[in-house]
Length: 141
Length: 141
DNA sequence: GTAAGAATTAGAATAATTCTAATTATTGAG
DNA sequence: CTCAATAATTAGAATTATTCTAATTCTTAC
Image (tube, rainbow over all chains, first blue to last red):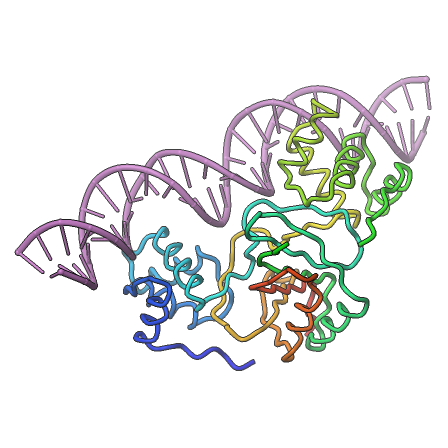
């Protein structure tokens, strides 16, 4: 997979501005740390890496910067079903739709074969015991 | 979507036994509460519902029961990327593979159109702004 | 240059989950 | 049947990840 190129500080500022946010040295460093090592770090790990370059930064600021970068679509949160784990006794293959307006979660039926088609995308040697598909958005009745 | 039928206490015991676990009154009540109202409750919500029937149960036991039911494949955890949120600067459409052996997460390229195909499964009126696909398993090199 | 708003900081607070130690229940061997 | 071993439960403490708070600093626009 070709990597996402690191954008320039000017472009970063512009992206942030597009969401009504400012650029700051902290946000630049947090972003460059993420692009520099693409191993899906946690906020704590980002904090540790950023501190090497900017020892006075606080964990709260790292959270703030990550939130800003996610908000302006420069960074994705990998597991964004934040909050408590939810449990589901439906054993049929299905996806979940998380309604951002109501906070509720609905099951979405999947046609047979779709999961297999997805599994087929895995490189050889990758054996997936589970596939989780989550949609996030709004349902208009 | 046709609902998962509630299995009998005997079948529940058998399923649990298959994973080296025992059946208990607490596990039966937790399971029946999940099947009784399929709204993807949190552990806390399960706790509240179960207490109505079994006031002496503890939250720790509810967690234990849920874990047991997940382990014997009677219940699915809806957001199972437990632990800290991870961040990813890769903006190309891609899925994630979470290696259970190493705890690491890899990006998985997706062919163009696959996300659209997935979105097409949504009932009308459902508008998804994000689709998250997570594989869990092992990668054998 | 100054006022208003935004961002940062340290540390406290909260929320979800896991751990601990004591107790109770169940199972299997004899 | 009885007893030891193991499993499950309980209450509460501990931990972990995240968010909040209040004080301070930085930017931007006028």
